[in-house]
Amino acid sequence: MKIAVIGGAGYIGSHTIIELYKAGHSVVAVDNLVNSCDESLRRVAEIIGQPVPFIKADARDAAAMDKIFKENHFDACIHFAGLKAVGESVAKPLEYYENNMNATFVLLNAMRNNGCKNFIFSSSATVYGNPAEIPITEKCPKGAITNPYGQTKSMLEQVLIDVQKAAPEWNVVLLRYFNPIGAHPSGRIGEDPNGIPNNLMPYITQTAVGIRKELGVFGNDYDTPDGTGVRDYIHVCDLASGHVSALKAIENKCGLAIYNLGTGHGYSVLDVVHAFEKVNGIKVPYSIKPRRAGDIATCYCNPEKAYKELGWKAQFGIEEMCRDAWNWQKNNPNGYRKG
Ligand code: NAD
Ligand code: UD1
Image 1 (cartoon, rainbow, N blue to C red):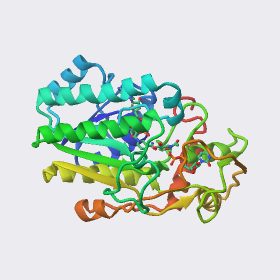
Image 2 (image 1 turned 30 degrees about the vertical axis):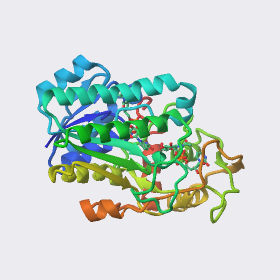
Image 3 (image 1 turned 90 degrees about the horizontal axis):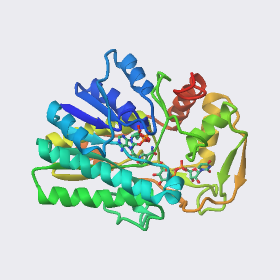
Image 4 (image 1 turned 45 degrees about the vertical axis):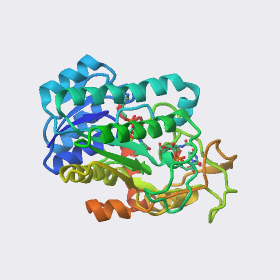
């Protein structure tokens, strides 16, 4: 299939492009580079041995999106483009609602105007709020969301459900990602956060490489085995291959489909720190800090539905995630931009 990969220069998009090529698909990456740089795509090209067609454009630009969809006759669109920093979304709600909602509206219109009816959306486990069941199945009701970023995911899921209901010939796949970490095993592409990382793994790798002094562990008094928060970490390459599997759902005319993409295993913050130290032979200094506002104790999924219906399941374990995250960080101590 020919796939529009919107937000393709970002962390998950760049890894997904590799898996799409491996599966025989062709892509055009579109990105405004607000949270990435095209160096990621140059490195993807190096890995796959061919150039990655790239158009620098804002997904909110209706004329640009219409032109791109008119000229390319895409079979499907994978939509990664969005702002994703939870804390920043609390401080800048308007910017988050405006970017994430409008980008999706404009894309859907461009698709409708040009006959592309297959859409894969990057949603998040955040839509479950403090989950009503563990492990979380797709039947778990959505929960109370405490930040604008998460609201955009939940609201856009509803928009997409309504769009598909009104046009049943559309195939819409909502992928609820758990916690993607790690990097391509080549060490050439990976996660390149701006400024001080909010998420656990980039904070660990930046501490290990000496950019940060120590990791703050946000709370050790949760109702979990060691008191620290438990999450379902998934290797970004597994997450990427989940998108290739989602295309199979589209080929099978799934209509609306929702899948959790996680491993089904919960690891605590200290489990991750210890796994990282063991597999990489490097110490990660840490100290216990107060809980972070908005955090929940435990979040991991039941990934059976994606396995039963798509044959997809995660292949990599926590040690490979830690190994590849470190391989990326140590080879690119300052990410893409500075060497
Ligand atoms: P990322 O920031 O690395 O990638 C998103 C890309 O979208 C960036 O390259 C950015 O420049 C681009 N972008 C943003 N707004 C745009 C616009 N208006 N027009 C064109 N391009 C635009 O983030 P990521 O980690 O690769 O996440 C991809 C998607 O998955 C996002 O929608 C994110 O919310 C979602 N998601 C991510 C995680 C995670 O932990 N990384 C978890 C759940 C869901
Ligand atoms: C966060 C977001 C969530 C988003 C997800 C993926 C919040 C409240 N939630 O989820 O909406 O979908 O990222 O981008 O921000 N931790 C530390 N020290 C750190 C960083 C994290 O102890 O410096 C802990 C956290 O308390 C948590 C775990 O590590 O228990 C994972 O945190 P993080 O990587 O930020 O992911 P989530 O909180 O699951």
